[in-house]
Image (cartoon, rainbow, N blue to C red; front, side):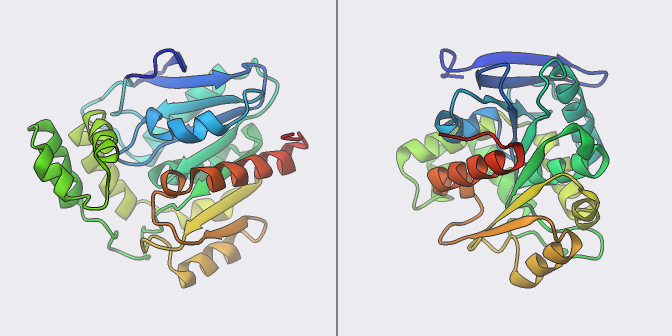
Length: 276
């Protein structure tokens, strides 16, 4: 990690995994916990974290199998991730402010699953372009598992020309950043998490969430189609919904300022704390 001087490092010990987080801001402020996607890790959110005012306590998790967190041989289903998140929330209970969850992709599914059981423990959640696959729903995810594994293999083998060919529009800096994300992901975490994404429920968790929620759906990338978005709105009518124009699945990287503005406006609305 190159941002040693920018972030604090926290570890939370659970029964099955030791979880690492990076943190910045006021430890007594409202905690904002960022949950990365299937092939991302804590530092994937570094741009958005830099835009969050330091009056908040911003934390970003290395989900199990990523970054400096433990990488068990198995245990990459939603229950495993939500158990880890519950341990993190427990570690923050000395802070009187219930946290805000901000999850992208798989991280958004984790947040929804957590909120379906533990809405009373959080102030709210922001779901950024969560995959809507699951039992009885769309069976195919836009990106096949083979793509993730080929990209991971190219990085692990040091074949950066091959890796770069997957991202023809990326700059060298963006390719290097993406490669670092793959270096911080274990293969078993990617594979089992991908199967979870296809086979575990999501919609019912959205329906069960009683905490305030904001859904940010990318216009591009085919993660959430319009009819699927309408289903989510019907399942949770209180959930705010924003269709983010002109961006694909990596919403927070393609539009970090807009993403941050929406997150901060949501926090202000649900907590009554002004961001000025």
